[in-house]
Each structure stands twice: as C-alpha cells, then as structure tokens.
Image 1 (cartoon, one colour):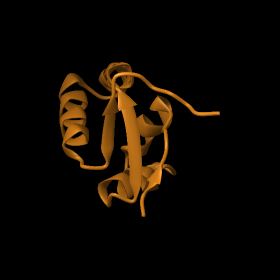
Image 2 (cartoon, rainbow, N blue to C red):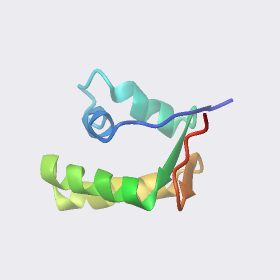
Image 3 (cartoon, rainbow, N blue to C red):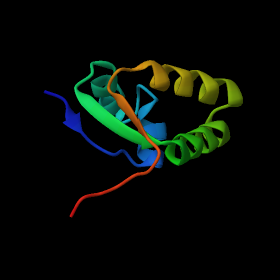
Image 4 (cartoon, helix red, strand yellow):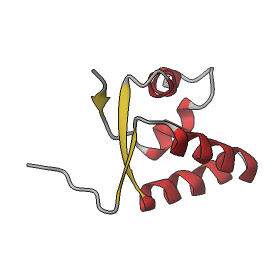
Length: 82
C-alpha cells in the first residue's frame, strides 16, 4: 500500500540528485510506494524551481516523467482535511 504524501518543492528538487540525502523520496515515487497529490499550481512551482536550480530541459523532462507516473494524483484544488 502506497503512502499518500505531500513533498515540499525544495525537498523534491533536492531529491533529484542521487547524492542527496532525500533521494530516497524519488526512488519511492518511482517504485510507486508513495502517492503524490498535486495541483497545477504545485506543478508550476516545481517547474519554476527546477529551471532555476537545473535547466529548462531538466524541468521539462522531470515534469513529463512525473505526469506519467500512475501514483501522481491531479486535483484542481488542494484540500487538507481536519
């Protein structure tokens, strides 16, 4: 059973590097052990930060790969239940 979680943009961007202490998050996403709910705004923020830290090409490729994963859930709105 996958764990549904929200990952901070800076943590996710840092996790892309295999040398990062957070790289295990990317590995869990790819292994479909984490479910990641996102909105279009979150994806735009990921893209913006990735372009600054890496490049336009890295940002585009990462977002394309992220959108293809079956454990990424898109929502028009983000709601946190109380």
